[in-house]
Length: 234
Image (cartoon, rainbow, N blue to C red):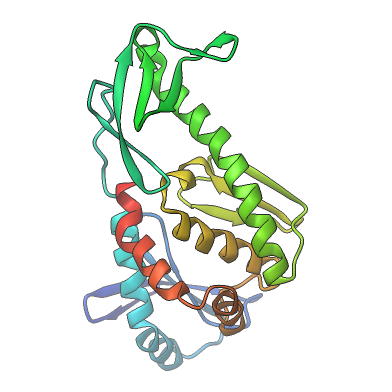
């Protein structure tokens, strides 16, 4: 029978492992709660740790609800809004447009996203390509600025889909950011950049991790909370 622990209105699935030395809580993508512990850890100790982490657990559950709430599919019609660096720009379908010596399917001009009408069936991919290109340039600049402040040097920077996360740091020192990062306001992007840079020194979200983040961005907590509350609509 699977071991469970009920604390208030929360249900934790208890997973014990002979290799584990500490107690930890995981909030899965679907909102399920897992309490990981050493094999011989007493239930009383598990319950005490779970109760001490209740505020953290409820905060993570709230973030999951915001992050995975359904979003309305884009229709790519005139006047529809699209975020870029925290601002919403309207879409305008046009017959044709050029960029230098070539025709471009999508560009941002005069506070409008302009999309060639005949490219509308491929609009989603055009937006992803455009956002990815902008994100690469923006993020490289910000990583260079904050790397000196954090006193680290990433091996590489990439922009791509990274699942349900805004960013990640690989064991080899590569920073990966979701292309949707470029939809966020600049100060929130900076928080994400610092967050991943600090992971090069502190792999876990330890007290020292957050101290290093705070040294680079003193108001990081406000930015972190903004992302938790507003990131889902991006």
